[in-house]
Image 1: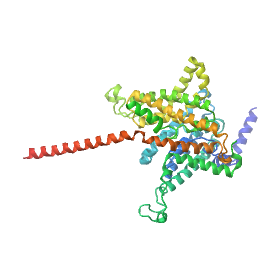
Image 2: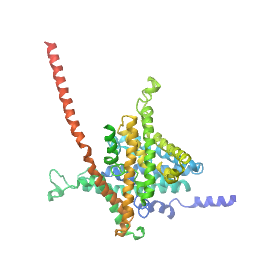
Image 3: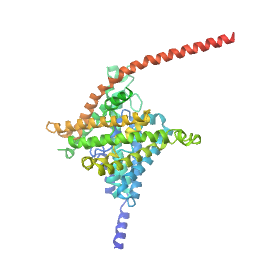
Image 4: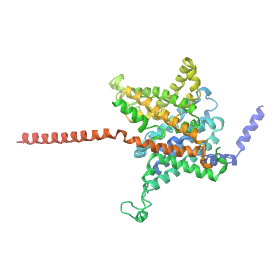
Length: 228
Length: 238
C-alpha cells in the first residue's frame, strides 16, 4: 500500500508545473467556462461598479488576490476542516483576506474605496469565491487550486473590464478618465460631428443589458453553450 | 412617518436587486419556478429581519469608534474596531442562519420542509450581508428602524425574485433567439425591470423639496447671527 501511495506522490511531483491540464485550469474559465456568463457566479458585484473602467480594474485585482490566496489556504486546510462547519471556516478565511484588501485600498486609494463602498465587503459573499472553494479547492492540491483561482478570477475580471470599457466609453466618452472621444463641451473630436454621450449607459440597468448582450454574442459564436 | 418612508424607500427605490444588484446569484439560479422562488424569498425576509437588527446592536455597542466607551467606561472610548465589521457581520449571519435552521426544524417542521434547502444557501447570499453593510454605511439611527430596514429590504428582494420567476415561467413559451435563451434573456429582462423600478425614484422627491427651504432658513439665520456678532464686536469696540 505504502509503495502505491509513494508512487502516486512521485507521479504527482513529476508532473510539470505548467502541464496541459494545469494550463487548461487557467484558460478554460476565461471563455468556455466563464464564471459570469456560464457558471452564473459572482454577478452581484460585477454589475454595480462597472460604470467606470478604473473601478472595474481595481475590483478584478481585488477578487484575483482574494480568490487565488483563499483557494490555496482552503486547499491546504482541506483535510482538517470538518465538513459540517466548512462554510463558516471558508467565510472566515475570505473575510480576513477581504479586510486586508479593504485596508490597503483605504490606505492607498481612498477616493476609490469610497466609490466602491460596500462592494469591497461584498467580495466575502461573492458566490464565485465560495463556489470555487466548494467545487475545486476542497478536492485539489494547493498549486492546482492556485491556478484555478487565477483562471476564474481572470475570467471574472475579463467580463468586468469589458462591461466597464463599454459603459465608460459610451456613457461618458472617457477611458480611465482620459477624454478619448474629444471634449463634449468645446465640441472637439467626435463631438464636432454632432455625437452625443449616452448617459443612459451610466445607469444601473444598462449593466445588466450589456452583460446580456455579451452572453448573446458568446453563445451565438459557440453553439454548444446554448440552453434548452 | 419616518418608518413609512424608510419602508417604501427600501422596497421600491433602493430595491436590493434592481438598484444595487445584491443577491443576484441566487436570484438568477433559483428563479425558474414560482414556488421555489417564494420559498427562498420568504427565507430571505426571515433571516434579514433577524440579522440586520443584530448587526445594528453589534455596530452600535462594539464596532463604532468610541462605542466601547458607552458601556465599558471612559478608558475604552478611544478604541475603533470598525475594521472588524466584515468578519463580525458575516460570523453573525452564518451563526444566525444555522441557529434559525435548528429552531425552525424543531418547532415548525412544515416551514422547515418548505425552506429547508434554501436556508444554508442564504449565508452566502449577498443581499443579507449587503443589508447589514448598507445599514452601517447609511447610519440607520434606531433599533426599530433597523428592524424595519431588515424586513423591508427583504420584502423588496422577495418581490423581485417573485416577479422574475413568474416572467420566466411565461417566457418559456415565447420564441426567444436561441443564444439568448435562459441566462441571456433573464439578464435583459432584469435590466428592463430595473428601468421600470427607476420610475419609483420620484416618489419621495416631494420631501426633499420641503427640506431645502429649511436649509435656506438655517443659512439665513446663521447669517443673521454672524451680523449680530459683528454688531456686538463693533459696539464693544466703541
